[in-house]
Length: 253
Length: 352
Image 1 (cartoon, each protein chain N blue to C red):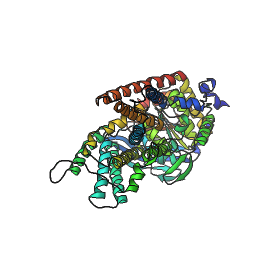
Image 2: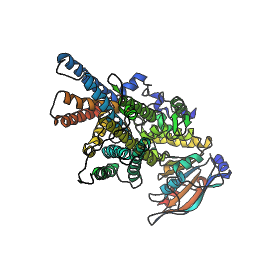
Image 3: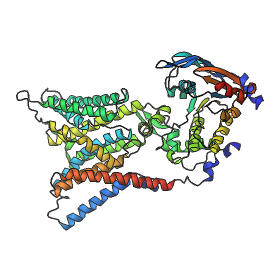
Image 4: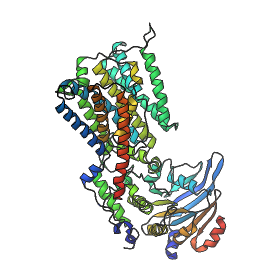
């Protein structure tokens, strides 16, 4: 484990933030935060409530824009003004409350906003449902999720299964950086372990993951590097080998 | 495969059984209302058989009325329904319905415009009203109920101002009097009881069906209405989707208005007060469109609007006093909503 992470840390940087600042109506939510994400690295982003974790994530996923600072992706400066921009670069975000529409089927959810189109003629763009169903099943199978029907509505799935669908979706669209925003928060212990095990697998599939949580015990075992935020500032950025749960807990509190 | 162990939750259970086409069809919310409509038609057949002389439902004259009037409700309801699936309401339908015909008629007869430009200006006004409704709702974050309520009153005023006779100051009706070919296009008899309106409403229904079920826009409509936050996280421009839906709704209202005014050849400012918008919303709800968005079918809306129109017609046929209509409509509205929510959900729960 440690040998792998050392290699990863030496490898090239896939994403970088420099001096990011964000204000919300006078509140300085993010103060000069800089960070680097290596390829195939699992980074734990931890901090208490109000530490600025969500703000940072919203900036990276394109939901909000930073007021100051730059973001580099694969060496180039990028401007992320909508979730679509991030997705197009290969940055997928998995939220605590999944970004799935409960009334719609699994297949439709996987392809929301990126529907495979049978033919396009100006404003006419018809969806290829057959392809959508087959690819959806395939995407689910890739994360070891065996479903017979891609037509099942999301509201018939459990919380863990829903995370499975979002993860399958992220995989399908060739994600390079996966942001997991407290994905285990409302899950049972059994389902949490499934999601954690899966995040560990990401590394082998060549994906960088940022795992946001306030539960150190979830992230510590699977992380290569930990970034600690407190009141909008980065107070630690350390490799796992150089720290311990106790030390991190003291930092956060 | 170590990976495969992690999601064995579902593979071990037999919960996911591929539904057959028939099952999927029968699960739709339009089934209850379809049966209700069928029952109503059977009752009318039975009544015709019992009282062939006094029950005049299946007479050529009455069928002509049905096939010319119901399409107006259907086209309005399709627009309102797509918007409702998007999670928004439009209460300014009756205003658009009247104002656009008024503008077309004025342009044609008073301002001396060419027919094509008169019709186009009517539709442009409709689209602009839809755009304003959409912008106020999405950009200024005013609930569409309020935004379009304001628009409803605004349009009532505009229509009144438009229709005022400059000499007397009293609002009056105007006539459209289009050329014969235009009358044939909008309201001409095809064969038997079938009129151009019937064809138009079938065209609208088919286009709307394709739009909702095969087009990417339809997928975005369902996503926006189902869970706006999730749709936004997935990168859908929900504001754009809603604005387009508002404009479609206004367009449908204007088209229905033009169709109706071509047939009646009289546009009265009182139409703005006739509660057409509520009829369209009621027809959608009867047809199984979920009030908070995300669910609904064109077939259901079609059935709902037919049921609405037929009940309306039946009450006239049996010479029921005018006040019966709202009572019946209200009762049917509540009964079908109970049927749709309770029966529909019970079915889904059992499966899961």
